[in-house]
Image (tube, rainbow, N blue to C red; front, side, top):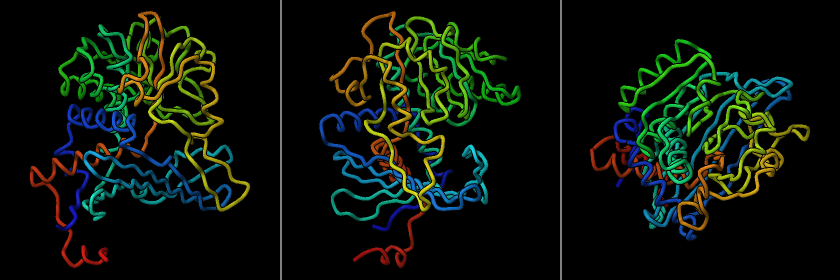
Length: 353
């Protein structure tokens, strides 16, 4: 059967957060049992020292059920400066795609845009972590940020707990109001759009820092109350969203991965971009006494929480297992609903031997 081509719009039609979290949970339990695996994320940097740099990021993961392998590709040209600020993209913005292969025959099953997929596999994993590690009666979730990552995390938290209130903050008044209106419409949960991060963090049992604040902390340790479940998405050398001293408050660290990413350069003097996860950047979490992976927690090999008072920290980064789970789900739902475009037979045959 010819491979299926799925656009971002196609993916949006079929991807639902509750189903995505179920697929992710199955994948992580398989990982804990040795029935799912992934290669650490790898990045190749090609370019001049302080000019345009081609950055090519790949992740690879496979599942036994359903039997699939996924290659995820993110390829972009970046404008870098001496402090390796990577926020300025050059050109059209790059290529973001996933390729799904059958684990039984090796054939290509689908090629799809993965913007929505990336946000959902990321947010869905955070939702599973909150389900296992947040206080059972958590009612208030605070979200720092208003972009796609923040939206996906919020949707997942609404699946994980019976929330009574969202509190959201973004430096842009317009962005946080748009986010608040959207979130209320999508979840039915009341939303407060607040004008400072402290008001969001204080009084929230679940806190997610889904920001692009890569060069300094935005969360102060005194804002974090006993029992809080905190999620951060930044782990590079620019630091986390939480001030470094705040890490000492935490009893437990849960991660979505078990190893750092790898980095490859065309120039010997290059080093990983400040946003990259390395062994050195992960060392900052060593002040937290107990470390587990989300796969260990979901499979019952490690606890998500042991007391009402403990503060726990979830570090949310992508792995090939995440992508395998969400991409396979999108393919299944697209086939069921007749969404997508089949690759022309002639094209399909080019890739067969």
